[in-house]
Amino acid sequence: MKTNFPMQPSRRRAVKTLASLVALSTASGFLMGCSPEKPQFKSIDLTGADYAQGFSLRDHNGKVRTLKDFAGKVVVVFFGFTQCPDVCPTAMAELAQVKQQLGADGDKLQAIFITVDPERDTAEMLKAYMGNFDPTFLALRPTLEQLPQVAKNFKIYYKKVDGKTPGSYTMDHSAGSYVFDEKGRIRLYNRYGSGADGLASDIRLLIKSS
Image (cartoon, rainbow, N blue to C red; front, side, top):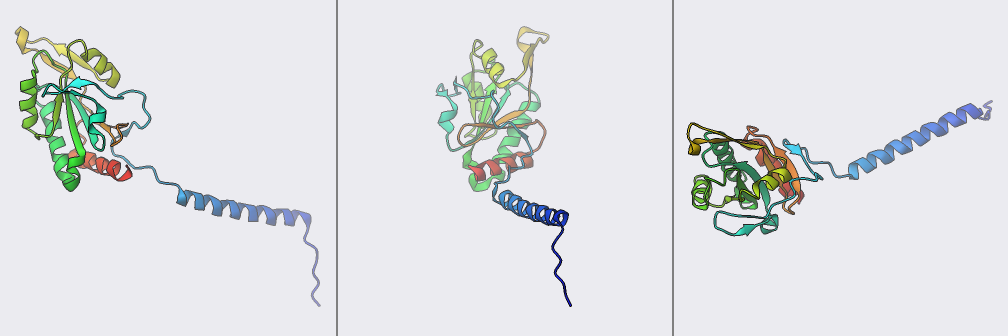
């Protein structure tokens, strides 16, 4: 003969607790499955940063440019100077390579070169310099008065290093690039020397998530 004994209070509490945990786990898994995953960028994620908010500078054609001019494009900003022997040409050549890797999405990339040497970098020199890499790349030329504020806004370093003659000086400067999404929001900082593959991958993620 089978007898149904009443469940002990402690056992009833244990069963209820277990049931609650199972329900919570199921709900949590459901919510996690519904939540969009954060993009896994190879560059440093600056989303929400309160600096590098933009610019208003003349380009090598004499036109004042702001980030709004490039709405719908991923903008990569690099600071340098045309007489830079290695870092600057390497970075710009890498950006040209990134554009090629993007294929059909290459038109969604806008490279911006901001000179830290406006004394020597004339508009004509900057235009010719951009032409060495890609005709769509733009150079911006701040005045000597504008340059300190632009550098402060982007938290970049630059310093004039004297040479043997007054015109043979060089410029020490930060070598990374800032990346803005298609809505003009600062998103990434790409370290110099990271390679074209990683930056191209990050730009594809930004385009996909826009």
